Image (cartoon, rainbow, N blue to C red):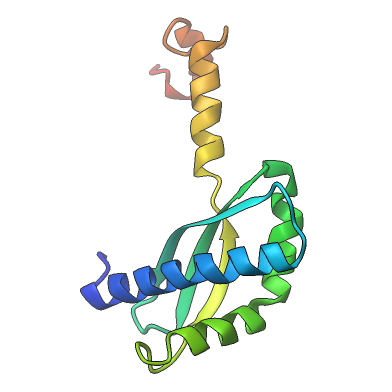
Length: 131
């Protein structure tokens, strides 16, 4: 089912403000050389839950950072509620996930450039072979 206009609007408002909140928290926390971006925010139909997808660079710090962000979710939600109090009546619960789509794209790109190119060697695609 496609998102409604309201869901998209709330998602974009949350995405914009979450970027500012997370960047401020990162700089105040003394994290150097770490880039956190909010790639997507999907809001449920009843507007009670917002699934936030984060891209974290470098990738090896991702699991550690997502744990910290999840543990501070109530504080982040409160900060967002303060920023959006004139736009939203109720702040949805925030669920944070790592967006690994860039990593997935990179793996595909590397396999196409390397010796394990499925276009050159169709035997690598065992799952797709027809009997």
